[in-house]
Length: 207
Ligand code: 2DT
Image 1: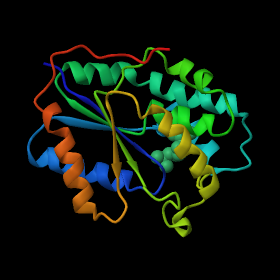
Image 2 (image 1 turned 30 degrees about the horizontal axis):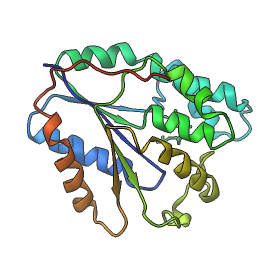
Image 3 (image 1 turned 120 degrees about the vertical axis):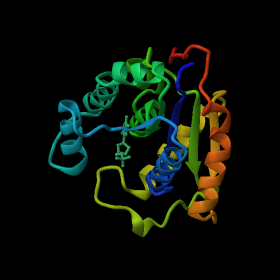
Image 4 (image 1 turned 135 degrees about the vertical axis):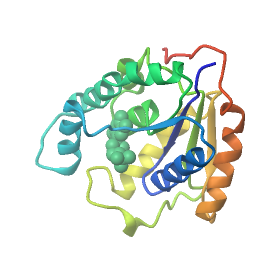
């Protein structure tokens, strides 16, 4: 049996990181072998460049080059992730290919072009997409200083994310008006059937 690959996706300020942390605490409590990989993974060589790009507006990189860096950042750690899955570890991804495509396509890059460098990467068994029912998303005042934390841009990203909603492993979860505990409860319920291990092979992203 291999471990499940679970992605938590969503717009900024939907509580992704809080929920991921809650999830890890619960997995730990139940002694389920797990690992979290947060993308962009900022502590690798490529990740350090990405961090500079995100935090320093003066770091000028064209959109295509930035996109390829985000994808390369996934490729540079994927063998390790695959090995963990084979060993039976449940791997939780905080953002993954879907964020990669949505954030770049929202800048105007072609959707298929954006997906191309990620073709061949393993597809999550389950992707939980945290989102708001209201288009007036997140308290706008809550946005920070990083490159993409602008309400108008987030709206565009949200529309692109919707393109994935027909994927079979995709599970949207509305967070409006729900407490942290309530959202956690819903995520936990979605995860149940994946925690005992899976015997099917991993699918990969394809055209
Ligand atoms: P965090 O706030 O979650 O650290 O993300 N992004 C992320 C992309 O543009 N492409 C990608 O492939 C990924 C994984 C989303 C930092 C920002 O990076 C964006 C927000």
